[in-house]
Image (cartoon, rainbow, N blue to C red):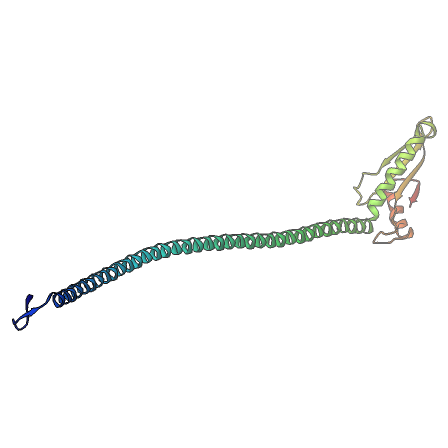
Length: 247
């Protein structure tokens, strides 16, 4: 027989071998189950802790990766912004350059038109001035011709008569002279005096010449009769036998 004591009431019991073995088995099974439960609980707690730690580590790793990715994303965004800014700046600069060149072309074209117009105006003014100058010269000559006095025309006629006389002088008038009347002591004078002599030096003829000529455009028109009285007066004063009016 075996004796066991109750742990609660401290009472001793006597049991046979079979009962003792059953009780021992129950105690052993109970302890084993308790130990098993404790181990399972411990293992569960350990796994929970490991899972929590793994979760924490995973979350930390995820956060680290996320932070790294965020940094990479920001870096890429910054590069994109820089690229966009650089591209926009290049576009702005190219646009400004095109605008400046376009403005310069417009300005140059405007200046070219203005210079061309000014050149045309200056050239036109120059030719108009030259034409006006030529017209003025022509008008002056026309006026000079129109207003050319009888005396001036007469002097031209005097030169012609003197030249023609000198052509014949050596053959037909060897003893004659044909000279201008420069004696104005009496208040008037003719144009030319012609005198011829014989071989003894005796005067055989004397003529007072008056040359009067007019252009078709001479301002003051005169008739031959207007000069006859003055011519006869000059003839008498210079002692000439004849008077000739050349016109």
